Amino acid sequence: MCSAIRAAFLCSQFSRKTTSVFSPHLRKMVHYQTEPRGRANSPDYRIYFKSSDGKCISPFHDIPLYAADQQQESDVPPKKIKTNEIATKEPLNPIKQDVKNGKLRYVANIFPHKGYIWNYGALPQTWEDPSHTDQETKCCGDNDPIDVCEIGSKVCATGQVIQVKVLGILALIDEGETDWKVIAINIEDPDASSLNSIEDVRKMKPGHLEATVDWFKTYKVPDGKPENRLAFGGQFKDKDFAVEVIKATHSFWKALVLRKKMKGEGIICQNSSLCDSPFRCSDAEAHAVLQAAPEYGEPLPVSSEVDKWHFITK
Image 1 (cartoon, rainbow, N blue to C red):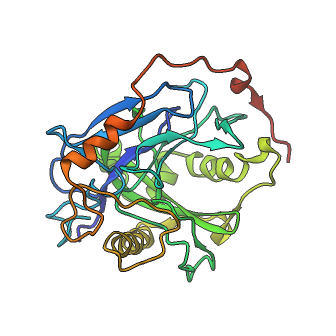
Image 2: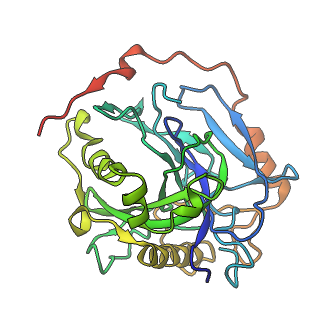
């Protein structure tokens, strides 16, 4: 294992930052294509993924977490900010906008933050197992890929896959479930060579870690919910701790897609590349999923109510 683990990041949220996929690397990343379906700002909007040769893939299962030469096996604009997510319970797991109580979800602007304050995404081929109780947090997993906050200066596009350097990790306890937040930086960022740990972030980007803690504590308050709880007293764990969490969630994912783990809480494991997985599908079957989705159309307008500010008093 190299001293600074690098991963593939899949960007899903579009704001100051977006949902992306991260994946540790040591070689040039394969280029991925995206194809939108449905109408943006509507419940049927999806972003599907394709390999560089145009084959339909799952960003959850088919994008490697680790490069082959790093591990022995393959290991992801400030507007009205959408809450996007990888659709883990749909075939091929496209990116979609989250829906709550029949309405599209948006991230509130909580002073002084406007939407997301980093590129927000996930590591492919990871899964926070809801049947596993973490020894450190004493809570089970949240049934999703592990989240990543990419702190570089460049804003990613929704669905963009980049390589990141892992720096540390924060543990959010969301409604009784462990929801890890990996802190990482794009390896092509001008500061990437100087940032190798959480302490480096604290020194070179003063206030950034504190803002991250504040954001995760308060982002649900405008919805009438109490502040979120953070494990470890809201302290960040270091890079080595983060790497162990990533390894564990990768092993949980592997058990899921190889059917060694029978209970996946509705997760769809359809993939096009995992030879040992019983959920592997043919190229034709994967293409049929894309063809069945609604054709891409003009985006719908977004209500002006979405872009309002919230001030949290303490």
